[in-house]
Image 1 (tube, rainbow, N blue to C red):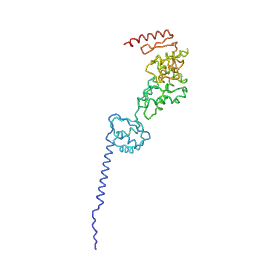
Image 2 (cartoon, one colour; image 1 turned 45 degrees about the vertical axis):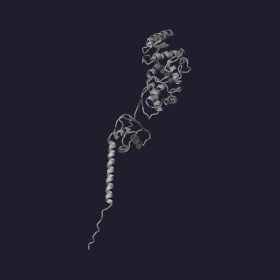
Image 3 (cartoon, helix red, strand yellow; image 1 turned 135 degrees about the vertical axis):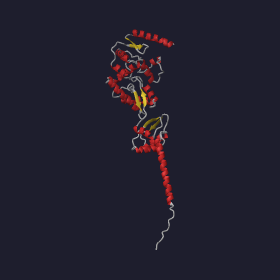
Image 4 (cartoon, rainbow, N blue to C red; image 1 turned 135 degrees about the horizontal axis):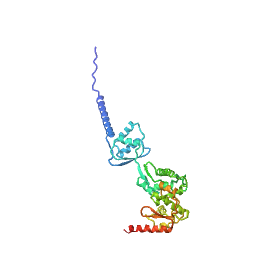
Length: 345
């Protein structure tokens, strides 16, 4: 006798399973679409925008910072690409973004460390106040903080100049490329390192303090390479005769140190009691008054052999040199006569 099996009713779990399966598929499709959209559709600014990625940041933190700054559309697309690329090391620093880009391009730049570089131009003859202003203008740090570094970090040059009152004279003029990940100490150290290279090439091996101080005065007195050695001879001849150097740039520097410089030299500046005032004090000032270039360093090491004790501008960018005060007086009179028409215009 055969037994009939009871008929099974509809399984209530099957429709639910189908619904969940379809929902999961839809979610996955949407997620994949969003991921593809985030990966392959360019995003980001149309004008330059800077983003600072802090040292020690995780990939997740970097992705979030980039999304928050509007550089990428989706931080998860960035993290997915990070996983696909094998978790490359991402570099901290300041980045500049100026056009919409795919996540891959942004990721590659951060992995490569394509950090924004600030150009710092230090012309020959810039003093520490000038350089500090240039540092601030370049967006690399505070003027006052840089001056503090220059005055405090003298250990950078103590091996070659134990008498150095600051790093003045040793911040070599050049065009530097710095990033915001570098400290102000790093920047000063780079300039000192450059000085050491150029000083060695110029033949400076000893008595750095006196030679760099003399070179700084030469640098401030003339911008003409051809006459630097003659200018050097004037100052060395004056030192030999125990005459005061009587050079205006040292008076200006004394006023700068006292925060009293007013853009020109006044009688009160000439009478101001400062060891840098070479109208009142014989010999070299206590240290350099600016940062000289290689030509001035060479002139300080190899002055011309002359009997000159004076020089004055010839109103054509160079100087007239003289041996006696009488010759100098005539040159000064000629200078003032040539200058008068321009003053009276």
